[in-house]
Length: 105
Figure (cartoon, one colour):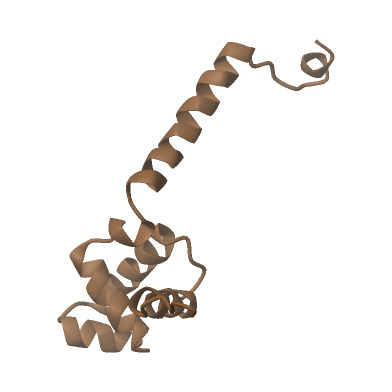
């Protein structure tokens, strides 16, 4: 009551539980069903491969016959889907994905 009186809000325990269950459940389902890289479309995968080769948006656009702005949009989507901050992280992730795991003897 003090929190509400001080301008805060009240959420009943049952509503809070439902919100947390819905919010957390979506994240867990997506994570357990697919790896983030598996959520990419075929075009996003193409662009990711070219990013991994160090190509700039303009070069990718030319190679795939797209507008540079369209490539920029795809890159933004890729970074969001993979939870990455920049193109360098995307290239590093791609290299890690393509290299087989070493087995220590």
